[in-house]
Image 1 (cartoon, rainbow, N blue to C red):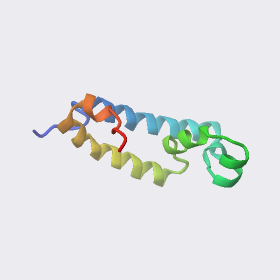
Image 2: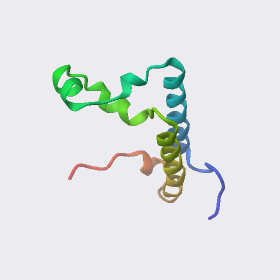
Image 3: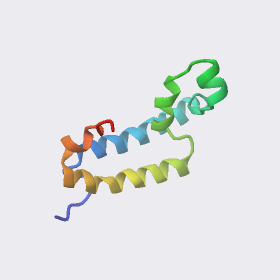
Length: 94
């Protein structure tokens, strides 16, 4: 079951290109300061809960982006084993 690239891994491919595109967009628009998160002023003081979602999807430097892309690229193997539908479903609460 050797396959190259993102063959039979649609969810991983979407995550891979989405993270790269969002990081490039943030760099071009020069809005990196919006994706920096601190608990005290941002979450508790100003109630900016949207930062919890965007902080994980956008990387502000090339090293973080490289390691995230490599990690997601290697996760494609798990998606091939489980299937795209089971891979995309979140885990049930304990």
